[in-house]
Length: 510
Image (cartoon, rainbow, N blue to C red):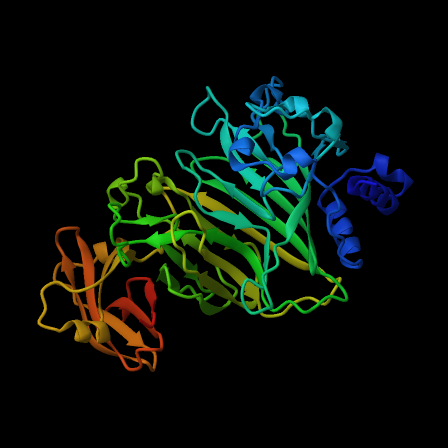
């Protein structure tokens, strides 16, 4: 028996004979998630047809959804839905449904006729309802003549969206489990979706999702509002399973990105000055301190934690929006979105965790950031989380005072030997923003720089940069133990007022 048949029986049991007269909503998915959390995890038992199980990358790329078969095509609705085909890396089917305006659920089955198989010679007729690998929603984001891709849900609990004029870059996830700190990372997956049919002239669309993994389940609601800054309001109700191993790191609102090289870490031999989907992690504490952590490509797994109480926001940002910073005509990294997460309600105590991984090239995501609550719920009890995720372009979240525009490491002309330069690295930081712009000419600005016990600050100078009408900080730090990292912090101060965000940096061991 296929798993979807078992699911249908379970839904009937949950909602009873009156289910047909009831509306299906977020609470309905929550009841499913809570029921699943009380049961052992059941691995997906569906098997792909032999033709799909051994498909190649090029064969899968040749399978395309037919736009004419889009859900709601020809109904004068602003949104349309299209599906992804199973095969290769996407082997676990998801079930997708539509919720009517009356709250009724209508299944959206896999149909071979919805796809163009290109040069493949498959016959999908015997396959039945395989399910889909995921789906995408379309909307006239950049003009009225065409419905652009707006948001994609595909693979585990991954999703990503676009604002006007943007190109896909970093991704978000529903949940991360033991990315670090456990016996191995667990990837929860959205096993089922319900898409709310939009009304004529709608400016938002709602998606419900059921999340499952060996140690957790969850109910999710995504309200997607397209625009120059597309926002996704996320409500999640997460349950830990009973009778499973403990969760060491529960990652809430996880973001996944790529950093290969930047102004702080050039890539030898690459004609492109920078290659990254995000260039830094930005955070704001409950007390209003803004922090900026430039990303790096380490030689080994590196984890940084920032303890916060009721954070006001965090995100992986692509601050550098100039083509000349990348010189990549195809990738167009300057169009990659930033992802800014604004908690809705109090998140309490916890930490933002940044995981940076080695990577040989730009085809691998090697950056992960998420929130870890200090206290986890008991098995079967809900953890309620709500946040707004904004996919931002040129107009993006900034600190209200001033911010770092670039971080560079290295020396110009110096009489220091190579060994001395390695032991005493130099950083050059540029700051700009309204708090600095408002200062009168000649205003005294001081660089406040500190290091942990493994570093000694030798030089910290702040001075105007007339070429860019910004302020520059030059700092030099001495390593005490070259095998251990040095944690650095720097901000600008005018008299007793802080006039910039706090730059934080981890000087990695050589």
